[in-house]
Image (tube, rainbow, N blue to C red):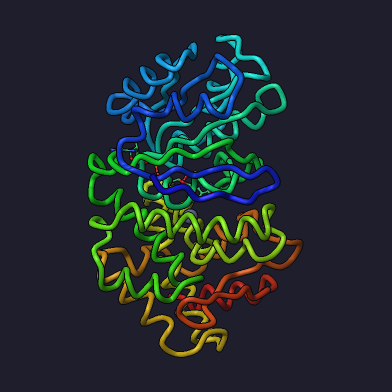
Length: 350
Ligand SMILES: NC(=O)c1ccc[n+]([C@@H]2O[C@H](COP(=O)([O-])OP(=O)(O)OC[C@H]3O[C@@H](n4cnc5c(N)ncnc54)[C@H](O)[C@@H]3O)[C@@H](O)[C@H]2O)c1
Ligand SMILES: [Zn+2]
């Protein structure tokens, strides 16, 4: 088992290995005194993995209640979130009990937000079952739901007590959902580690999956350890996300997060090269990765549609917005744009 420690305000471990779902109860028993937990999942993951996780928790002596909501980004809303809070209350969870989020990024983000707010905050454990959730969303403590006005517009910083990543779970992932995780993995290489990017471009991700998840988590953990609440350096993790979130929103959340981020990285890199923020060659590095992994390079929306969606994005500070661009392959920086600058950036992106 690989273990990476995230040095957030309260440090916590991320365990990565095959065969961990059956060991969840034993691992969790080591970090809590509570005997009651709520397992939060979606209907797809429930069928696949709720039984072994609940059994393992029960074998370790926990009282377990299970809540599942319809799978997919379209469930990431106030109504599903409200249903979770009511479920926790109906099952009489107290402030010393905890939640377990079993699933992809939607389960982790929304279940984490329920844990952050139920009775002003209870502990939670992340058990990511998608490559994306294991490599990105389960680490770092950002929890959220979408609002009609945009993606992740309500949320909280709430770090998990532990992350348990069983890489066997990826065997049941459809290829396109696995590819969503590849997009965030490529992002990590592009913004922080040229050697990792080069490994991805030549190596076999599935064959070295534990190692790839570990490197993703290390990169994210380093950034989060330096800037837990995203005042500065953590913004670099948003490479491809300003326009990526706009694409998701324009699609009514039918384009997945990973695919939208892939297009967002290409669009941002094209604009950055045209406007002189990035050197020549950075766009080609992003495009080469998209082509290798069958990830999208473009999007079906106009610059004005993207601009309108992006100005609803919360990562905006008064009249300006920080966009992330590549300084070189393996290194990123932010550029602060006013709204006219963002319009110009969006037009140059297409
Ligand atoms: N908090 C963060 O820092 C952060 C970072 C990146 C992304 N995100 C968020 O994560 C979300 C995307 O996460 P996602 O891509 O995991 O989406 P998801 O949670 O919707 O999962 C994708 C689909 O895969 C199914 N699934 C999950 N595990 C499976 C398995 N092992 N086998 C078969 N099917 C499985 C799910 O039921 C779902 O239908 C977005 O909402 C995004 O905003 C958050
Ligand atoms: Zn993302």
